[in-house]
Image 1 (cartoon, protein in one colour):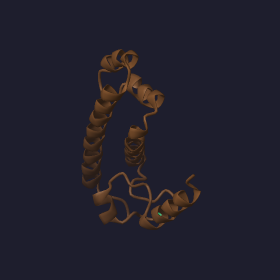
Image 2 (cartoon, rainbow, N blue to C red; image 1 turned 135 degrees about the vertical axis):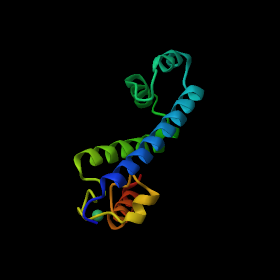
Image 3 (cartoon, helix red, strand yellow; image 1 turned 180 degrees about the horizontal axis):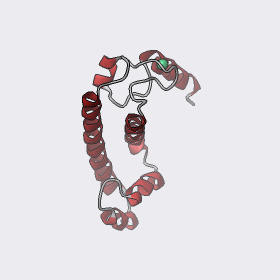
Image 4 (tube, rainbow, N blue to C red; image 1 turned 135 degrees about the horizontal axis):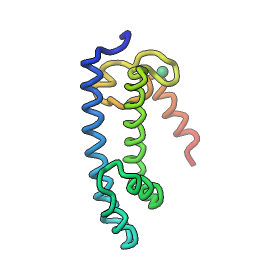
Amino acid sequence: MAGMSPEKLAEVKERLLDRKRRLWQEVKQQLKSNIGDGYQEMLAAARDEEDQATVSLMAETNLTLLGPKRQELEAIEEAMNRIESGNYGYCEVCGLSIEPRRLEIMPEAPLCRNCMSHREKLAKATAR
Ligand SMILES: [Zn+2]
């Protein structure tokens, strides 16, 4: 796969944006039900999902619940940056194209299957 067509990239970007919006909604819901009064105001003041206040709120509250969602949001953000810079679809570690079927399932995937399973093994080994 020598690069994706602009049409395909636009489609991927659309999917990423959609996923991002949904994640933000979930994050906000969780924040609402988990944070104290002091933060409620801050959250209410955050108008759109990319408001810096919400971002710092997420960082500050440090809810373990949000961990996976934050990671996914970051992955989506990075994937969108890669689309902009023309690196989308290539593995961050080995530089080879990521399997198209893998990207279908997980458009934000930064790594090819090999590197991902390698990293997962490493993560498990170093956990705790
Ligand atoms: Zn790789």
